[in-house]
Image 1 (tube, protein in one colour):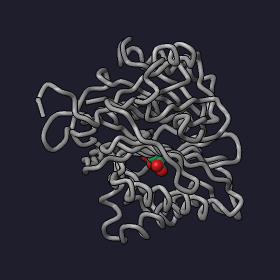
Image 2 (tube, rainbow, N blue to C red):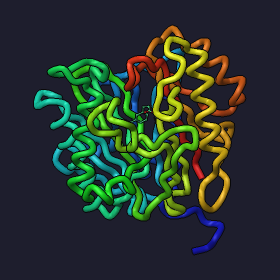
Image 3 (tube, rainbow, N blue to C red):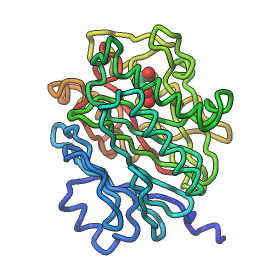
Length: 335
Ligand code: 3EB
């Protein structure tokens, strides 16, 4: 391959209002891997029309509500059971939504069992990013918090596919936040070759959290550097005011925001095997989940000071997985 050509699997990301975005992408339909629309009815629209996921959480403060992942070359699309997917051989995107009638643990286990099986079958067995939107994330279901039940189901699916000892090497960047509605919405990106899953020097690996946070620890890494074939994108997990494993600054939005930024900077500053990581000002998307819509003005002003004006900043209303947490920040820096 000519070194100046983009990798075949390289992905692009566009964020905007649905109308202008659709106009900008007219004629590009064959290259669209995934469209995610916030504040929309929950549904993974079936191929061949294109893979489009509605996430019920509202975009806040005039944030652009739609994001589109584009492939450098035409994509193939399909369905497997409850999952709708699109891929180009190097990158695979998929979406699954599931009612929680059978219980949150069982529903989550089934959703993840299916997505891990699909990823293997499609030749993209390496997860690089998972986004989860869980209704009633802090509510109890027969005396246990839903997020904890979600963690039980997710861990069981990873154990079942990879075995307990191998599973933690597969945990990718992730977010898990609350959602309106009744269905678990999970969306993922996977790659044909392995990426690099990163820890955060200020934080315990989430998969090593002590049992105080639930019987099964959360199955994710703090960030994933996607393989070169996928453009070497850096996927930053949802990051919150957690130091070590403890929640910091309960009740203080500013305190949590500053602690979260310290966490993100510690991760980015630690670099990765093979080189430095991008700085936050180089990110192509920073998304902020806010428990309270009223917080958007204050958080935006502080983030603009820190990030500058270039980085697309998207605010989304969502409960956070620990009831004391008021916000969570994630992002993507394309390679
Ligand atoms: C934390 O640090 C905050 O369960 O997939 C952040 C990112 C959080 C991902 C997940 C949870 C998840 O534990 C919560």
